[in-house]
Image (cartoon, rainbow, N blue to C red; front, side, top):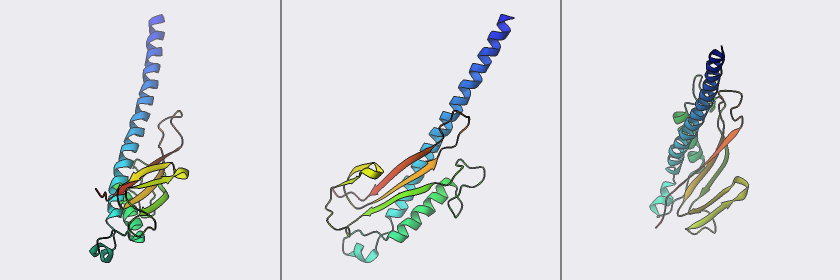
Length: 164
């Protein structure tokens, strides 16, 4: 009888541990997918430059085009609908929110590269070596059990044209 109870206890512990492993796997997958998507989207946004300024040797971002390209990249890479809400059956349950957006380029007054970019309210401290687009996105992590982290994850991406 004691062996039956021991086997049942061990099966319960095994199922409990596998629940935590599944949660860790999903969390890691969301982090990786979000970071790769942000990198690709920021790259697309950084390509939206003013052509006339570029002929003069200056990099000036077209802000509306960059934001549109960033959102389009998020939609394509995270399988989102036009309103940035996740499609049914995808990894995310709630839409990602762009909480911060900034551009540092040759049209920004008082900037010489390398530039110390500090935004303590966004927890961003970075030395930028050239014109850059900066985005910060928050996403609600999906949970697999009641012990899963129930909160937002913030990811920051800075895509720059480094001058050496």
